[in-house]
Amino acid sequence: MKKADKLVRLIHNPSAGEGKYSKPEIVKIMKSHGYECSYVSSEKKSLKDIAPETQFIAIAGGDGTIRKTIMNLLSKKLKFKRPIALLPFGTANNIATSLGINEDVSKNVSTWDNYKLRNFDVGQIIGLDKAAYFIEAVGFGLFPKLIETLEKKDTSNIETAEDEFELALSELLKITQTYSAISCTVEIDNQIIEEDCLMVEVMNISRLGPNLKLSEKADPGDGFFDVIIIPVEKRIVMEKYIQDIAQGKKVTFPIKPIHAKTLNVTWKGSDIHIDDEIRNEEKGISLEISLLHSLLEVIVNKDDLN
Image (tube, rainbow, N blue to C red; front, side, top):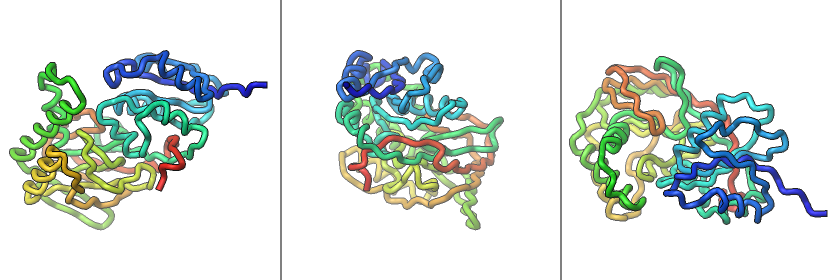
């Protein structure tokens, strides 16, 4: 008797990666590896009516689709907790890349029978009008300014991911060269850091923005944030790093992160981002940032783990 296919709920963004993979293509690949697909577009109520026999939830799309689905998942009271599989189709794919997940769909799906569940933490922010959550990073200064700048840009001439990265790095360099330092206080454990800063990033994953690996060893399941603080006197260091990356050099980010489970940040400016969302708050905001450890489980290939 033929072994029954395993049931997977597939949440797919058809436009991700310029529509590189269509619904029939993904379903066919999954079928060839022994998975029955319960398909739904990411634009619909993707977590509604999940069958009890569903093995896990697969998310096919870029960082935005992954983030949206995870946040919806956290807000739902599903009868059974299910692990998440990622099929990264976006431009940067910072989340999947931080987990070492293959971007080739067939190779990725082929590892699902030999997987390990990896914990994935979620960040929580207190101090806004209501509690907020993040899976990538919350930050102040350069990167929210970059997001805001790129949203206003005419990108009709952008044709490839390489063009998009080039534009983002070019704009980030300009912002870094001209950004006015902001007074900031960061309280971590018993340490108080008071600086005029260009940037503070509280990172849950290793990469940010145009695939910049700002924290070499950041692990989204280790129970710690990696906090990057760039004081104004490190402006030239940041500029050089961006220039080196733009020139295709393999360089390590020169500023070491600080590990923290909880911290308080008081930022006297208004440039704040939560994952890819801009939050234009009043100047002088104070936030308490804490980590919800092992809230999610993500499928990764055993052979790719260190």
